[in-house]
Image (tube, rainbow, N blue to C red; front, side):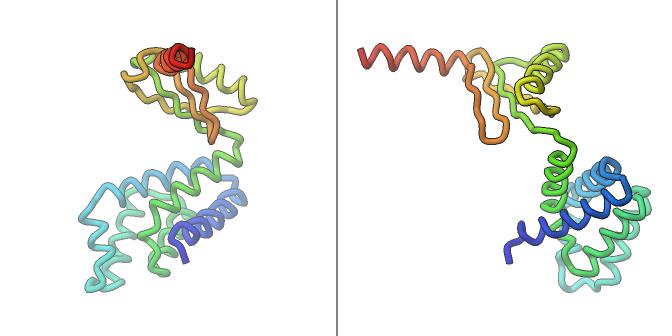
Amino acid sequence: MSQIVIAKRYAKALLNLAEKEKALETVSKELLEVTQTFTGSQELQSVLADTKIPSLVKTDIVNEIIEKQQLTPLVSTFLQYLMSKRRIALLGDIEIVFSQLVREKLGILEAEVTVAKQLSEDEIADVTKQLSEYSGKKVHVSIHVDNSIIGGIVTRIGSVVIDGSLRNQLTRVYQSIIRG
């Protein structure tokens, strides 16, 4: 079975539990933090993946991380369950799927916005507001700077791309000149 399929199953199970406890945002935040801890340390990943290290030692390491990060019982139990099923390596994929499911549940869309130069906070707020009005949902905006678009803005919401870049407009003019 594919790793992502397995990760989806765990993420959906955690989502259902978090909904029952009315703790979607808390669980989402904690899961992201603990995932960053696990994926941020190559040494930790290799220790947990090493088959020569006893399971009890690995479990102790995970429990120490749980204790230091003061995780809620739900996230703590979830991590311990992943350890017992030897699925802790899927934590990064589980977190990605879980975050997507939470955003869907809360009606939040992800928008990738590419601009030629860094935007001010007011400009980002304005873009976010306009995209929210356009989509009819709350939008979380990720800003990327790419000088090659020359000017304007390129927006991707899901599979929809709105290309208002100067580069695109110049390309259209060039193509219409060539066609005659």
